[in-house]
Image (cartoon, rainbow, N blue to C red; front, side, top):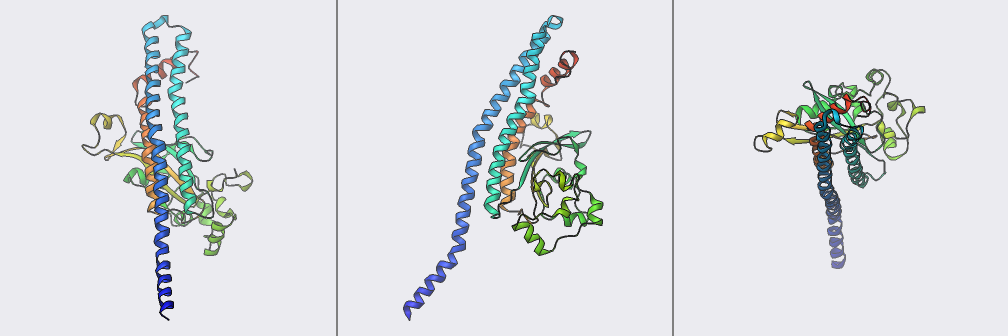
Length: 336
């Protein structure tokens, strides 16, 4: 009898430790992934910074060469300036997209580790451009081909407006419900269609959407260009959960130099460079613990690439002068 009691006690002890062991293993895997993320970006950021500085240095040299020669500058001098300009404007953004794609892979690995039904989330980066006291949003890179790469007003989006206003992340795990409550706005969603025709799925339907290949076709039709016959094959283009994390720096007194703050878009002690956006086709996909933390790590690292890009482009007087000089030359005005 004592043997059974001891065995039973040991079994209960073992079972009670299973959740702790699983959590410990999950934490180990999480830390390993963080290590991979930091390890990759440490070297790549240094390399990107070096290449950006070298490209900008060459642009300055070519620009000065044309200015020094004045009217004696030849076609070849302008061609050299155009090549140097494009190495900065096009080359650096292409490299940034490559590094973003690698970080999207890390994020996909993280998301799949927590969602065993293997439906993929979608990731993208959008820049924030301050124009006349209002922010414009410009899509830069995505884990799937971007549907639209033209700029639009931040005021058209609840998520971007919130992040710009507060400097904090934005999380919504049930967009259809929030649209019904008039608490979520997205220029791609036909609100009147949602109010008039869309019915919120029941719990069983949501389970089918989560664990099978079944799609919420009624929700898809609430989006611009949501005709099923024109689908791109990416159901996550029509999402129900979203997490938006800022690519930003705090600009409190003493945190950053005055020179840095003066050259960047500072509003209410925050420098908002852009946004890391995560979307998923199911409701309740993201949580406010590890998901936000992991996305924030990625966003903070990506912001360092974007700072170097900004310094060499929109923050550079040489870059702008080179653009103006090339635009004024009839042979090159359409090439920049």
